[in-house]
Image (spheres, rainbow, N blue to C red):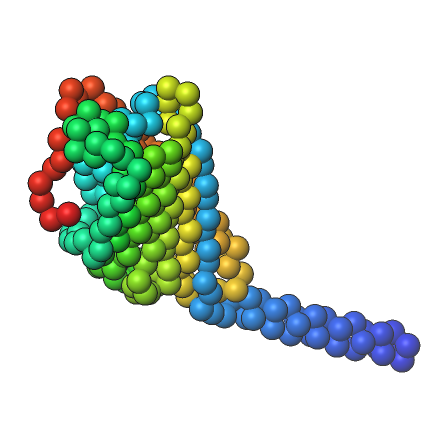
Length: 230
């Protein structure tokens, strides 16, 4: 073999070794486990076949929180009222109108909730939430947010907005969750997709829960308040 061919052979071998080292380094880098916060967000609007005044009564007088939480893969463990305020200044007959289901009063309430988490990958069994509800004559706004991290669940929040739409009620719900995961860099995008899928599923379940909950009480002649820890 000529000196020229020998030199080229050594050169190719050197390039080959270098390429293997580089590829190996890249694979090792991508395979190294890192802490990553994956975020999932979703929003959906839908129509409930129920007049807004009746929808409002049901949401206020029945315990919608437990029903909605149950459809989100959680279980309501505790619910307590932190603050409540009722403004009857624009309602000349607050008691009579309340009985008739035509209340013009505004209601503001703050609750503390404790829910059970059933997903073992979150490495937590409970989550503390603060819920703020603003109930007006023409709209409902409810925002629920985690009070701090729970295991790998960095944060969790949902919102509900409802308003009249002719003889029905238009509802918009949203959810946002952030989950801290330990994954190889190569699988970060997969973790993001999984958390986003969890947010998508949570919204779908909330829509089902609200629709079923309202339908369950819509035909009741009188919407009576539920007794309990409110």
